[in-house]
Image 1: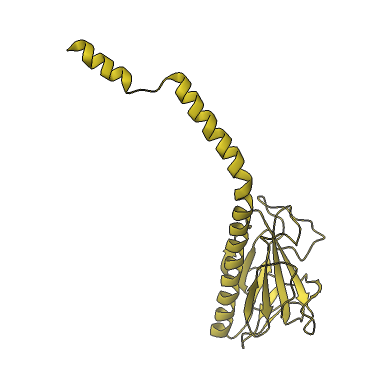
Image 2: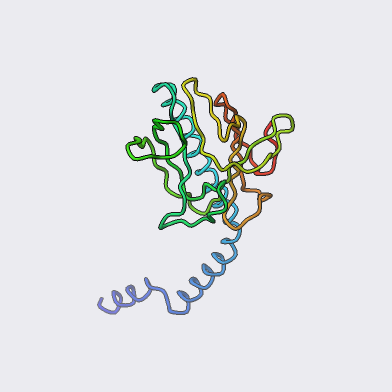
Length: 200
């Protein structure tokens, strides 16, 4: 009786060789599968930032209509967790803030009420550019914040047609996982699955 029980216990386990073979096979499969997941992860990250930015634009416009204008969306400059070139004033990589701009000067002064603060996007570059209304193509980088008046009209540097170009960090604008938010002055937002395509 004792011999039968002990042989039963031994037959339930794995040998060291079986365990090593299983771990090796799993490691090889993981190494093969990882590169194919990279574009999927990048697409998800860009989409998440795009949706967050779109939500911010809708929120800011809603607040402007409710408060009679004076709402500004301002990009954050370099922070402890994020660094961008000081010369690249069109980069929104360090997040952004929505606030009540009492004197409509586009600057967050002391006493201006902060309505929303967005942290730096993870592994995504965001660039603000003006759009040529006749061609839909980029017409130069925008360094000014987005301001919304009492009628819900959005402008940046007196331009009422602009776009946010989003790309995975370290990749070109032609990357398949890149995206664009085309924004008109009236608040219409169109999301495109490229960061080079024309806003039409």
